[in-house]
Image (cartoon, rainbow, N blue to C red):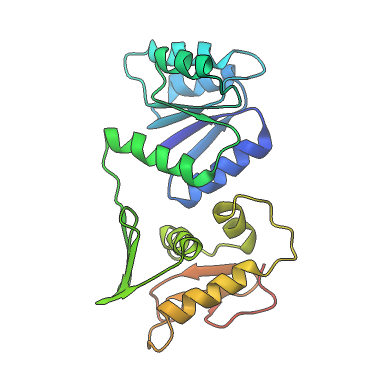
Length: 237
């Protein structure tokens, strides 16, 4: 699934892109309306996330040009302009959804999934070895054993499983799950990883949650993932 994020504020654009890439999407960013329209002309996107306050062309003008195409993808407006009139105008001009800044990433992610499901069903069940995660029902099981997870534990595990075999740093996990900048001091990720290990790996011969030294953590069903350890390391990033 390919998503275009049209957002001129780099911090927000990077945050959205990292989060959605972590969920398995291919994400491209356009910093203004002119660049966005050029990309849309050349590439068929599955979804567009559109800010209204762009430096060159008003976002509603971009929306109208997108809707004038013979084939146009779903458009999610993401804007600080959040009055009732703004929302109504955006939807009447052809937006499929409207989310007001500031926003919670989990809500943005849910709306993205909902819009993409209209066009093409997405796999909502993740599997790594005998560990399964149902994203819709928010159920986790290892083999026949159902595992109860707290909301943040579930979010971290989903993020790791969507990136199976890919090491994720503490920074990436904090920014994706807690939607805040990583201050380099907190050990909150280590604490939650220990909780997950105690519920998912403890007492089992095959460990699925691995520490990648100097990088972070990952989920993998391989017996000995490359450069990985199942024990926490102080050198992790």
